Length: 186
Image 1: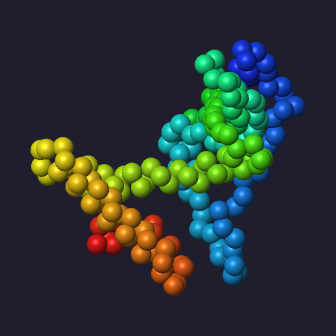
Image 2: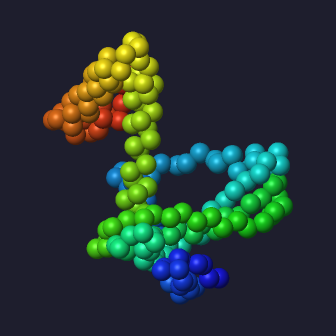
């Protein structure tokens, strides 16, 4: 399978340029591993005939890309996910999805670029907390300067919470405070 890579208008990622991604475990067990409860979700999805999408494999590739109006070339890291789509016990089809990461980082491997980008996805949670936790987007007045001041004050409240957590002597508790929703913190 070849994929167009748009490198100066031509070029392809060959089958040999893809490498399988080895994801690191989210955590390591520091004590005895506990007995896991029976996983019933897969069985229920199969019995009730729901559509089930399962990850079969992930591969990563990369190429250089230069937009037409730019002089600089950028590194594009591509993740290809092969998915198996089932309904009940029937396999419907295989699906392939591509995820693109554009970066200027050239000194780290492609797998680390993907890991770094996935680790930063928590930013969406921060935006959600600013919108709904501290209500930074719910303006109480109608003129622009007052609304701006309200947003700055609420963003500062969020930052104070984060700094409070980072400066705590107990790092584990500090991490909990940093991840805590603003309403619970208040």
